[in-house]
Amino acid sequence: MCNNMFSLDGKVAVVTGAGGILCGEISMGLAKAGAKIALLDLRLDMAEKNAEAIRNQGYEAAAFECNVLDKKSIENAKDEVLKKFGRVDILLNGAGGNKPDGTTSDKLSFFDIPQDAVSWVFNLNILGTIMPTQVFGKLFAEQDSGCVINISSMSAFHPLTRTVAYSAAKAAVSNFTEWMAVHFNQEYSKNIRVNAIAPGFLLTQQNYYLMVDEKTGGNTPRGESVLRKTPMARFGKPEELVGGVIYLCSDASKFVNGVVLPIDGGFNAYSGV
Ligand code: NAD
Image (cartoon, rainbow, N blue to C red; front, side):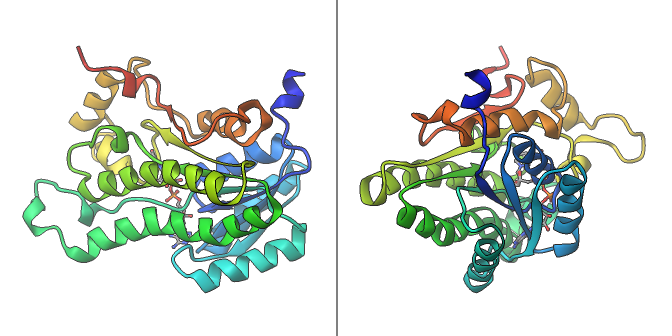
């Protein structure tokens, strides 16, 4: 009973940003839960590497080139995925990220943050979530079923210091998650769900420079402050996102819609006092 409830057998999942660290790990987890995986990324070579790792474990996966900021590129990827797998049941909007130029530091004040850095971060995180949802969500509306998972962040609940563009962009992702959940149900189908995960602090390429002092290998003052505010007192591991994503994609959560699920070792719950 329990196993069946979480099973993704027979489902096809499209994962954007699947050449990256977190979405590569999540793709592997979805495959182990029974789904066939279409790994979409701007970097086809990275998506292919992660697809190969999944195939090497005996599961079905294929890589597709896709720029989530180019509607035509997303449409092409959708056509290719349909040719390969015949249908799509799950869309995980994983492409996203931050860049140092959109973040204040000792060398860059808020007043000098360049417009193009803010646009880059906004576009990738929010436009790059909305546009694939337009393309694959239309399929879901036509087939009267589907599931969308977005990736928000702790910085959406309470903005983190320094990451001005990223915090605003991820707050928009959480807002869009709620908006889209309601819109699908009211306008197209009661069988489409839209939810998000909000990872806590995991050590990845995106935040390594903020958390770890490259000279000493120890934690930066910011890294220390994250650990003090995380009741479980450690950074998360990418594979610890997988269970929450499988839950949100499966029948185990079939009445859960429009939520942003923190996977954060208690960070969001703790006031610091
Ligand atoms: P990553 O940089 O390892 O992977 C991101 C992937 O997206 C890369 O493979 C990149 O090629 C791809 N990509 C970039 N622009 C693209 C585009 N225009 N079209 C298609 N693909 C594109 O990042 P990650 O750390 O694995 O993060 C994945 C998601 O999780 C992001 O949304 C990120 O903001 C979010 N997140 C990460 C953390 C963390 O601690 N790393 C915390 C919270 C949220």
